[in-house]
View 1 (tube, one colour):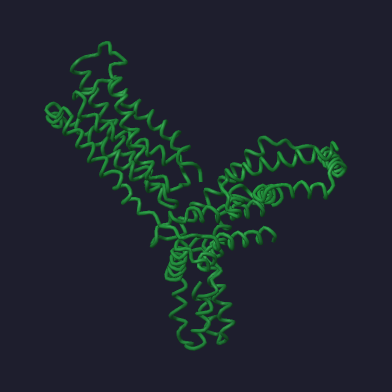
View 2: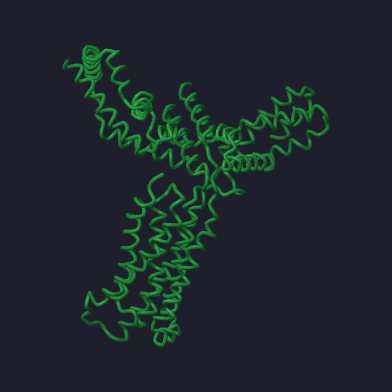
Length: 217
Length: 257
């Protein structure tokens, strides 16, 4: 009874001291606010600085094209999913949507590796040959992730781990898509594993960093 | 079910009896339609009763209305309207919304907790979370899934903290607890009298006194105390720490003297 009374007191206090709040924009609009500038800058960087002469003809190669578009789709859908599930009560299905293109990206990568090994044979790979790729994905991905987290700062969600992990996946796969324009076409196994490690590492890093940055509610 | 209830309603010409029947009907029908939404819906029932009084032939029209989603829709629309008003900080609408939401929250909390005080804790934590997160509600969308998600998160948090506490606390045999309690009581009563405590409390700043009052005496959580006092959680922690230092110094000083 006393507890109920204190609940009533709390309601009185909350309603009496409330100040007007501006509702957040719908997640799809906020996703566009992150994605449009990001994709625009990525396109500009790829156009001005990318190795287009070498990369554009490679799009005729199905595994290469699938890997690029799947990585891009994973990035876009992950950002959309992160912003959607950051709002309480939105369907958990959002969290699974980016998994489909992510599987397509990994599948296309494995396919590219198989083609590469078939053509070039198995030889001694330098494990650190793709260190530049790792640095590129982590650094570009961090910038994209920061933009996304800035947009997420007011969402105060109930499931931070899923959101920050999806944010990390989105940022990393968008960075991976941009890397395509600075990378010689045709992925070898070490290359692909490096990309995969960078993406996974960024997800783990962002899930940890993001949790403390966005804070528990 | 309608074949059972409608003839009963038809028999009744008394609005009060009709309201009673309608209330029973809602108790049966509402959980099936809206899951855990509150079944206390006096306003529509009053409306049904008065309509029945003026136009007795109309019950065929509104009895199906109870079993169809339109009742649930009107409840949902009402919450949407109240929530929108809450975002605009209209105190009456906001208080009304929170009061109605309380029973909804309690139903969900009961799925996770058995203890009445734990349920009420979840209700209060959820109300505070709803208050803090009310800007995340998108006007025009159903309120129930939004609030259910917040409630579930708070209920699970409460479960986690209960398990964490259970891990670090060790149960003592009953006698040992009583011995400790008796010895503490006698020692404390010997050492510090009420007036000494009163003097020590009076020496605190208002913020420190408020922190002690809310966190130590009323045993509110940091979030609740923050909402009640208007101080940030960090400020409360800091005030409490300083207050405890000051009290310790004062009481030990008195004791030494």
